[in-house]
Image: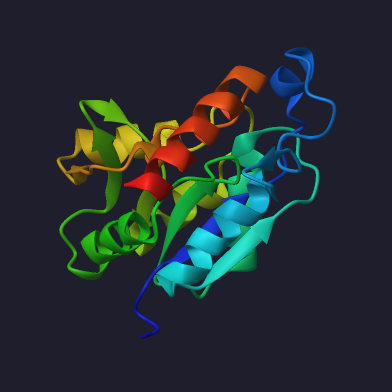
Length: 187
C-alpha cells in the first residue's frame, strides 16, 4: 500500500491496573480471548488492514507520553491512527476507513462513532505533529482532538464496528468481548 497512508500507533504501555484489580491474573494484553492473547488479536487486525504500524510498549508515565513517544518513532508518517492495544475486536475495515479520511483530507482529526459513542482509533493528520509531540500525562490526545475539532477540522466517522468501543479494562469486559467474538464467528 502507498506511503501516503497513516501509520497505526498501537499503545501497549499501560500497566492495566483496573484489570488486575478486577481479579485478572495476568496483564490484560496477555489475557486470553478465544484462546489468543488480547494484544495478538489487535496486532492481527492491524496487520490485516495493510497499514504500517508501530507498537509502543516502553513504560511511560501516561497515555499522552506514550503517544508522543510513538510519534517520535514514526516522524516520517503521513499521519497516525492512535489505537490502544486493548481493543482486540477492532476490524481491519475500520482501520482502513479511518486511514482513508486522512488520505482524502476530509479532516485533520477523525474518530469512529458507534451509536453516538466515540471510539478508537483516532486519526491524526500531519498538521497535528507538533501537538502530538507535546503530549504528556494521563489525558491522551483529547486536547489535540478538541483543538482541531473546535476549528471545524474534526470529523466523526459512523461505523458498525463494536470493536471501536470494546476495550479490555476488566474481567467483565473480557467476558463481553469473548461473547462478541463468538457472535461474529457465528455470523
